Image (cartoon, rainbow, N blue to C red):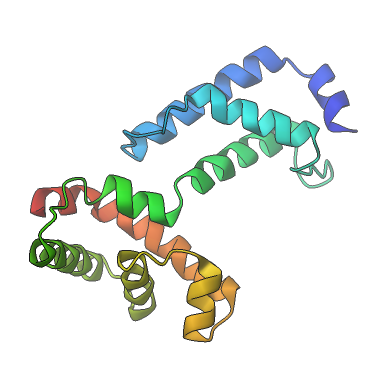
Length: 172
């Protein structure tokens, strides 16, 4: 079955409404305040467009169409909150211009990450981010490790940053 056939055979109004609710709840759980002008419906629309344009490929033997759509939505939201956006937008909301103050705030975030269980690899990636280097390929090349390894560390670090976000806001 193709994506077009699946869309025609499902109650898309119900699915879209459920996807919008899912996106709203996800944003609440992430305590996302700045969506850069996007609404939950925009994420749902992106998923549907990418599915129809074959930028997101559905294998009906692996999952149902609804599971596919929700998996794509989860991925779309995750991709939106890239590592750089999480650090630059959500955590240090009020970084001052004073370099000493910025260094102290970065040190506080690093301490919070370590208390949350961050390993050395995660701290190293976080340090790259604080220096404005967020592209996995650049970090990979500099460290001499595979891009896939950097991406795996980044995923762990992002999850950890979300956990320490409220602690960090209290410290800063």
